[in-house]
Image (tube, rainbow, N blue to C red; front, side, top):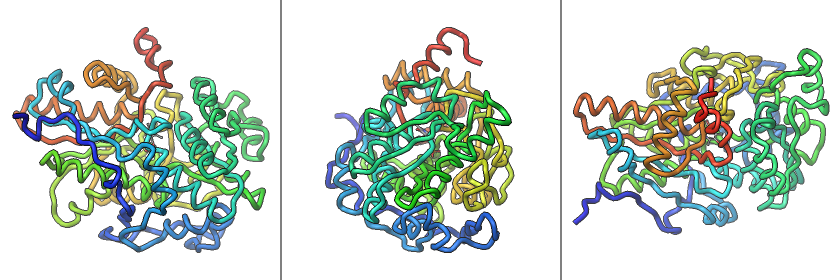
Length: 435
Ligand SMILES: *Cc1c(COP(=O)(O)O)cnc(C)c1O
């Protein structure tokens, strides 16, 4: 008979989708430094955030409740693609000749191809509930823009997307995908906003950055009453929505009769890793021992080389100041294919966990992550997003270290998204043209 631990996948039933998100703010050992008003530098009140976000999300941003119920319409939309499977990477283990057991939570099966739909659906719902007609947002690689386009379509909202120029040019099919789901897409910096025009004046060839695109999207929301802004990562409510990932993964690890020694995720703004990690963090606060590793690109080393300080979320300085690891809000990383990891800051919650030593940071260069992506695609079959490949590379390194030490470590990582719309990066790598 096959042992439980030699199963390839654990798939939960529809009834096992979590009914509540887990709010790690409830269990943090030290309280999170509050966001500060961009002009007064005083802690933000609910009303300060009201011009940008709906009240339902602002309340979640600051909520002390441990569990926050998932509304029925959100749960109904989750049923299209959740629960997501938890796989054991048996073929990859064999290839690496490792005694380690490698598990991955597969968020690539959502219609948008990544974990981002988990919060896109929730954010569209709370905006709709408060009578908002349109959302504005930024997107890097196009994953967030496409997820939000679909979320908005589900709840009948319009969407304007400011897409970082370098990705707009590298990933034309993402734009088509967003338009297929009904969004309007602009190459950022645009000349439609003050923030965009200022950048273009200084550098007409600017490749753009998430920081600039956020400024443009926030400015657009501030300019009209019925438009609100939506952010796909970083903020507490976004990480909260992503905890469906970790809550499911915890149940699935139980069914595998295993528990992770190492939990790994790639980090842009920190949402997919937070989503997987936070439900396990609860155990860690209670004394459970495992390592947590946040992986980033070497060209955007927020966690490994940034400062832990208050900074703006956007380039122009319109957002509240967040206490986080940051490279400075005017940092423009060089273009890499993992566009979703080109962000100067990081989730304040994840930042404090790193600051206090609960989570480690690690950085890899682009060529190494594409090598790892190929090994994964050639064993497990799924073609990873370049962002996801950062987590894969780290998981593979951990597994290879076990080959040398003989340790039977249990490694869990988040497979944040597939790379079927990132084939240009693969093309360049396979042709030996990738820097
Ligand atoms: C956006 C994205 C990321 C990075 O964002 P986080 O908020 O750090 O999760 C990682 N992987 C994929 C596939 C993405 O689309």
